[in-house]
Length: 622
Image (cartoon, rainbow, N blue to C red; front, top):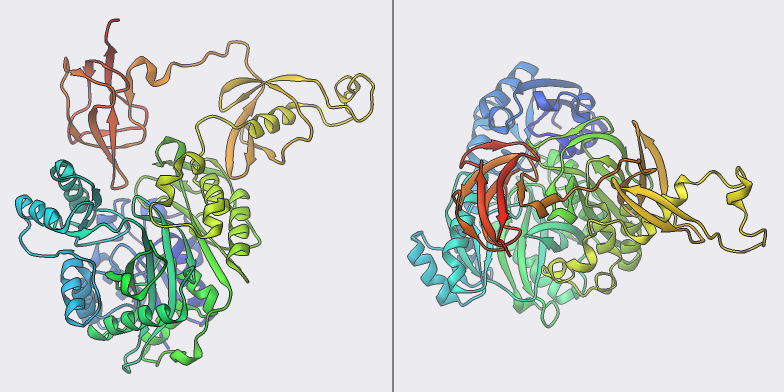
């Protein structure tokens, strides 16, 4: 068994690897950037080495610094986690060349499956069904547009490198193709350093099914069944579950056998995932499930597989890397119950899911379920890395029970002042259609109006906020009594500021369940995953006009990647003014009404802070 392990990653996955390594008696070494010096994974490792400044290219993506840290600390092996260098064949080769053990897929398999176009061609030759599309080398816009027309709209433009939902665009009409191709390529180049794309037929009722694989150096390959990752937003997974709903034994056997065949075709070793797209318009059927791509690493959602199989996949990785055979053969693996995982992100759903940054002054995560997290109260969410706060994982005998447990867990999340998607996750997990299994990858988009919380507090929140300002029961006889008649509802009107906006609330009984605590100098109310500041209204309170005055403000810190108007231009409501990039995500800022660009301070390539004035739109005179 490996005796010492350097983890070339950060956050939640570093903590996860450290936990298993410690149980196996393996010494762990963390590497970290300046920005991560106070993070839990640095403290939890047996030894830690700072390898650079906050930008990933100067720390977590600097191969030489990581190798130097391994030599300096006497590490025997390197585990890359996921993301960063986990699917970098050159780094895997450099690790082996340095005499270290690479806890990951062979470089040859990473290369074979790392580019989606080459992987599809390989799978076709191995007899694995692939999605109809174009995977050729001619990357000219003219050829790509022609191939999209041949495949038939709608199509999906997809970066051949990388993953995580970045570098993907759905195109419904030929007129959209060129603009969306350019946007996709910009994002792909920024995220993966490669702007090549492929074209796929867009399946109208798609389910995202993936199979967990494991191979060892003795020629054994097994699957650990499937996961369903269909609940997505902009191709980014939101809630994952295992097994897949509606997967009968015959279809499961066909899909899992195809995945094993794909792994054997590239001589696979270690943990990997074969991702399939299924046309679920008539349920899951073996003849309507096609290969999409292979991830040659451990997946973010691996805990749901661990929960239904009772296996520790990180332990499997470490044993395989140590030269041991797989801990289980196929006949020794079985599915037990149902598991779900929700990704808790620092983002604001009511503002288009924009990332939210800042200090975690209050952080409370549910204590009755499995929580995978890489942050703690007092840490800061920065713009440098992925904004994930935690993964909430539940296991139950049935899917219905798992959904109920997940919704309850998401409602129990308390985070302040950073905004999160907890309420959105709770709504999704408790949605009647989700619980009934009426899902595909378009579920969130179709039901956004009922899943995404609005920017205004609900009546339940207002009631709870107003109740929180009242004296404790019995402390004030004049407010504790209602006309001296027993069992009568109180008839009180209370003015309360929620989210810095005053509201007049008529109190009702019973009061909604909520928790109000002091965080610093603020009173904060937590209710079903939401968080609101609560205060008694100030005498000089005034509301702001917001965007209605035509001020276009940066919704988050980032870089201006394009400016589409000039000062003096006439614009129409909804017209794109400029595009801001932050955390490798593009956000288009639009004109709020018809008018004229009276002022323009945004410049292409410029860095801006949150709230910075980028442009001013003067409304048309009526």
